[in-house]
Length: 152
Image (cartoon, rainbow, N blue to C red; front, top):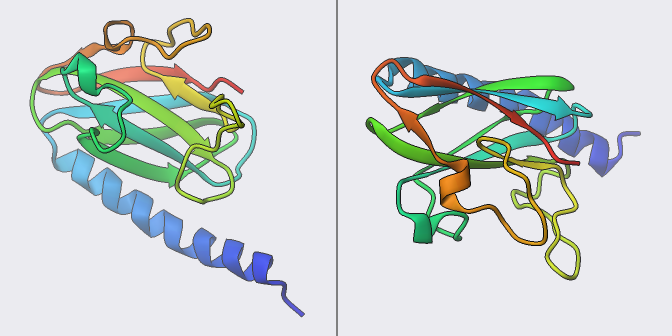
């Protein structure tokens, strides 16, 4: 007899590769692809969800202010993903491993993430989120390559 959890995980496993392929195709057509290698992924659980933020420092890490969101299945070790930037410019990325597939970054009662997360440029994080300036990078035609380490 199959449990509801098993059936749910099986359905997600079937659906996620198609979703990841769609995102990759979008990126291949982009003149400004951001190729991201997410490292220090400790398990294949869930997805890696990345939010692309533009060059408005006040909007960085604010709910509803992302330009693009991409989700791909998590791969232990390093997970590769591609985010299509809308145009050349300055951007910042915040990402997390959504282990339980609830489509949000789970936090403890004081707001500290309990799921692995990462920020472009891998800034030091101590008692407060990083600034846009610490996370910002430039994208020109042809795109750019980034490596972001998950903080566990």
